[in-house]
Image 1 (cartoon, rainbow, N blue to C red):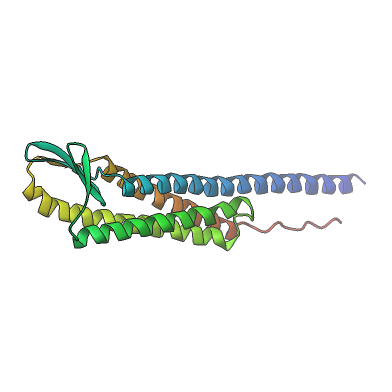
Image 2: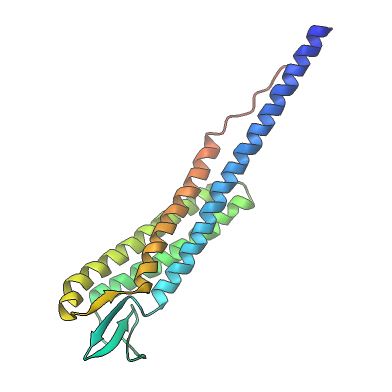
Length: 201
């Protein structure tokens, strides 16, 4: 009788440990997925702001302060649309817009972690979309940086990159981090150990 009680007590304690371990594992997964979603939302906002604003570069033009973005240039606070077609501007715009769309898709797919669980394949797809968004934005910024330094750096002596450009780089970091969090959450669900069945007798 005493041995039977000890056996059932041991089974109960093991079951309690497994339940606590499973709960901790689930919390960790939702923390990863939630962190990825939050980083993705922040990256999406920054990508939109960076793409839409006109402060990628500031410089002096004919003694006046000027700044330019991907769509317009401003001199003495009067903004005008770019009237010439330059390949590097078109490429930067295209990659930034694709980065925004990819990041939006990643955020939407990542939200499925809270409705269908982190084992849903859409979480993995969302992570891939976020990483792709970071790569596209990185490519856009690399093109803009290279052309600006080699061309505008020689044309304008007093110039510097401005805050729209800087938050673009911040968005790249957040997008990559969001994608990694989402992919880690999905991969760890596949590594979750299956609960063992203890015999009752």
